[in-house]
Length: 236
Figure (cartoon, rainbow, N blue to C red):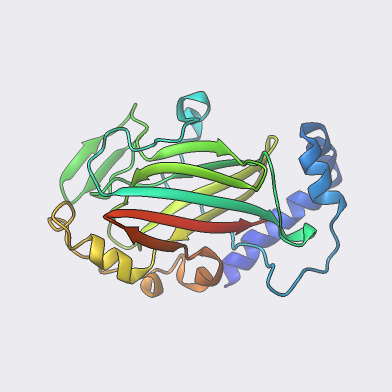
């Protein structure tokens, strides 16, 4: 928990800094509303989503119009996954945040990330110049974004997860991760498309990065006729 508290303190310091506040005000009216309505008091059920590290594969240099899209699968094989993320403001009683930028990225079904050279169970893969599993969208009037992708695989030492960053204007408000229910992972990894890699030995509770923040980072995932649907609320 010390690491999470440190990350959160950095985020809150950045948000409260006067210079940054002025920059936010110039970015959008949404930022004004988010900050101006704030008090230290929040509803019991409306707590901020835990911050987490961006990890080794954020690919900051290749963001923008190329990944401003709904379909992020890029024809990669895997079980279809719909991703619905809602952004809410803790300082406005968990009201939806409109026009927030949501960036996400995750590995393919075999545990490899786009944009990098990865060494995995299939050997070394050079995925530089590729963008599969990466996308950004802006939240609508109810604070929601939608992506269409494939169910991610896994790599040693980590539970099944995806990464997310929330921006308002040009200000990064939160870097976090989203975990998948272990039982759903086990079912997916037993299917014909995933069984060659086998089960992920690192469950959510064995993952040193995410195990202490599952209360705010564990998504709801359901199966509808072989298509999986992920829904998650990120509170900033």
